[in-house]
Length: 361
Image (cartoon, rainbow, N blue to C red; front, side, top):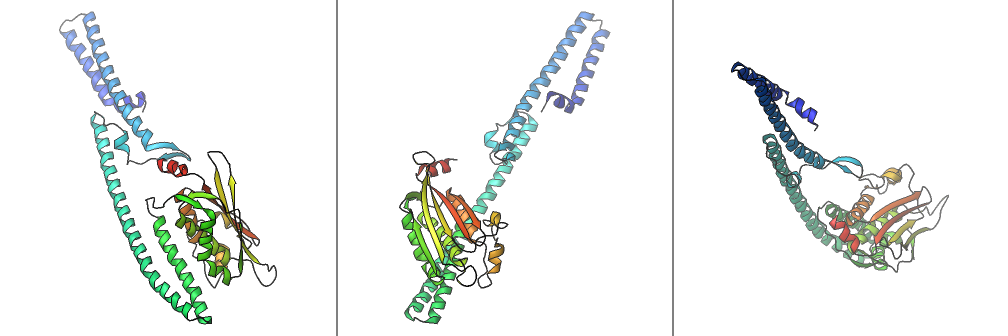
């Protein structure tokens, strides 16, 4: 807010002030006052009017500039809106009328926003509680059906076990989808040997790999990172299932043995940025270049997902991988060559301070 604009907004008050000064001059001249007295009085009136204008301007300028700084601020992608939630805490309540009215409006808006956020958070917590209870209940009949199939071996039981495995996978996706939407950090960061979490993920999805004839190669997994074991096991499970689902063709032109390779390498050793990159690579169908930028989008299935008529993709697996990695502060990327290979890389911190910095920021 410039002084010229402020004066323009108060042109009516300035006109009244000038008219009042002229009126005082006429009255004093009519009373027989000399020119020196008139000049003295005029200087005092003009100086008083200017002082009042400047004091009012600077008080308002300080307030509105502070409001402007906090409503619109410079972010990593340029100017962005900060919102009114923190406005009453960051901007001091002014002493002029229109400023107080604006500040009270910000305060009321912030309280309304907070109440809405609390309501959404409560609804999310209720939804998550329901989903977790539902998952717990539905796993009981799944486990019972799996036990019955194991006790009655045969072709039908094997087919039933495969379908039960798919159902169990979808149930796990529902559980982690509900958890991923939570505003709370509900993961537990511990020292995590990569070999252990990879072994757990492979054991859970062993049937899919065996049924589809996928062999596994592990390289350099004797490294330790910091993360949540259950979340990482779920993430790896999604990648293992994708590798099995979109495995290399075993018949016809281009047939080759399906191989899933998991390798870990340490980077920036001895530096604050030291980290371990876990690569999950398969020699399967690959991903078309046009689909690659969108594979982490929610619900995106792409060309290869639509081509699998036997088990249409939901487009949730890689979305959850990205979302859970983001929630834990892990970096995930994907590279692929259509018809040859797909590689997903996950970067893990090697010290707990990574999470301390993430929480504090």
